[in-house]
Image (cartoon, rainbow, N blue to C red; front, side, top):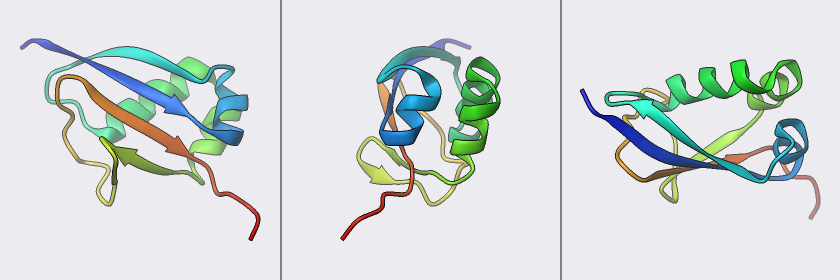
Length: 86
């Protein structure tokens, strides 16, 4: 199987926990959003793992309702923590 390249963008508390605004990943073909979240948690540690539990996600601009959603080449995953304010 061929690997896929994708981009992850972090916002607000997720950006602080990851220590970056975004990163490029190469994942195995057939990977899901859930697989990427596991990779990110392992890569960035406990603080991001905690933040990810409260986050919502956009995959190529569409809300992720099912973390078993498959990734495609060039996919972009936005990590969105809960936002406060009115």
